[in-house]
Image (tube, rainbow, N blue to C red; front, side, top):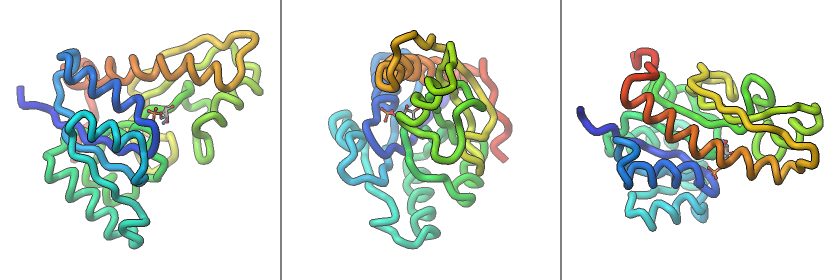
Length: 203
Ligand code: GRF
């Protein structure tokens, strides 16, 4: 089977990306982490790319203020590394139509809640976990989904639950959910790559 090349888009800490890189490197995931793009020059994600000898690029509205040029560059880099699957890993930018169409049904995101609950515009990071607690939920979790033009709105590919405990704070909940995320992202990519989860047609 031809190697699947993964292209990461990440803005911050990149711990999900690292979990996927580790799984590729130790043979749990039959894929090649090919390239990392970050809109944040000082992101930990780019540092992780350097440490793992993966080409890393800073591309964002600072380097390319015109969104069309930025999209062109993002596509150019992803194609240069022959990326088959685009992995969003804490990427704090909306993916615009040109990139969506070029990688149709091949852009995957993770969200730290059981979508469609606690998703949508403005629902990110600690805000998600605070909203879960405020709603008195007994369980939360993580969702892997395809990316479309709605925030957190694409086809759900996999979910995994995590309990909400009585004395949880947003921080303690985030710490529980992030562990679930790391496992779920790797498992879901394994299933996509071995055909157990079928993505809709790319064209
Ligand atoms: C994760 O909680 C993910 O669900 C969300 O952004 C966070 C990224 O964390 N999309 P990290 O950068 O992977 O550590």
